[in-house]
Image (cartoon, rainbow, N blue to C red; front, side, top):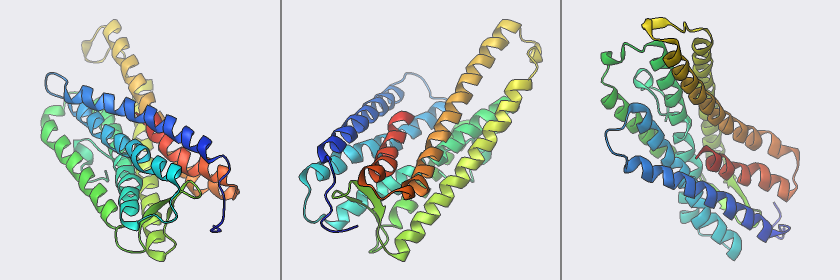
Length: 285
């Protein structure tokens, strides 16, 4: 990108980022507080939902506290250390965490996409084995799954901190980008492959869950039709929510890897790289 490039209508882009990230932060922070202050013990699924609010809050707050101020100030030079720390925490650690938190059966999987995978596995496991939850200690296994997700996220964050390996924000062109070195490109490829793999696994579980919802016996276990119908509607709504959340991450990846390459126009790049990134986490909340 040329050094003397000028981004057209920069304050419009900044205003859009501010509105989207503020909306996402408020919603996700509200949910975070609601879960933390909820009376009684959280179920395994509620713990996964609580864990999923953290990457949403992190990404939206990184825009509010770092991206937007830099975009307004337009400094001649941005210090690498804080830039790469924010980039790695939001663009790598929080990104991968949002997809994998899993159920007791899938503790060995990754952690955003990690959490999302765990939520899919949780629903699938409960739907197919409703009477076998006593086999495993759900509380400890869910806690372990969340811990694994956090550890994986920390690893993804730390690998980009050395020189020439980071993910940084360029306020001149309003886009996040990996540094132009082989180390950074390798890390980006690993991240993208990981998220794609997690998304495929999560959607495979969604498909299995859909088959059960479509073909399950309405009168199984001796339950009356009214109760079974209510339970089935609730599960279908949760299933739809999960599929939509999975699709959000897939759409963002497609925007990042393919759509953004179709044009070098700065607003086009901004829309399918930067705006797509924060919009996914705002809508996810």
